[in-house]
Length: 152
Image 1 (cartoon, helix red, strand yellow):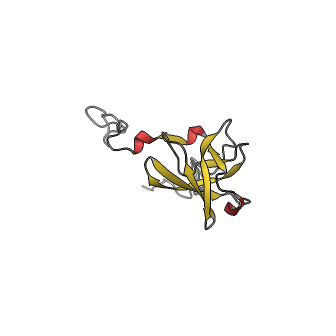
Image 2 (tube, one colour):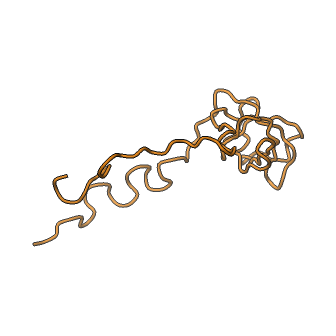
Image 3 (cartoon, helix red, strand yellow):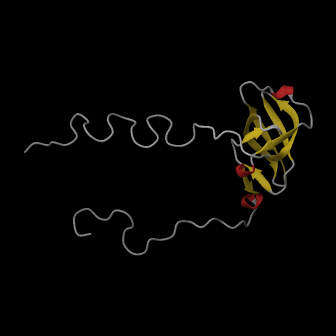
């Protein structure tokens, strides 16, 4: 009896890297959604630090995502949030400028803006915050799949 499986890679996705998201880079990220329809004030520029911008955040009830794009008032992208530091109610962010932007070109108290969809409620970072529910149980038996062999 001869084994006729797989062989030279016929069928399925030919070669490596097929399937979801293509070969490299996976199925997520790697693209820019473009500028948002509206932005809200995030905070103000304090000073450059190496090649980054240090921003004092003026919002008390929201925290931006890491890598959230940062904009000017007229919705020109100036960079992405790199780090968040400081106290929970009094915090700062560092912004990594985009290629053609220099941190030293900004002035103290220049306002910067963020997409409101790229913010989280601050309650997520406070002690005693309600945890999001985890996936529910599947009841008796297996869930997906099942045992090997028939009958089941």
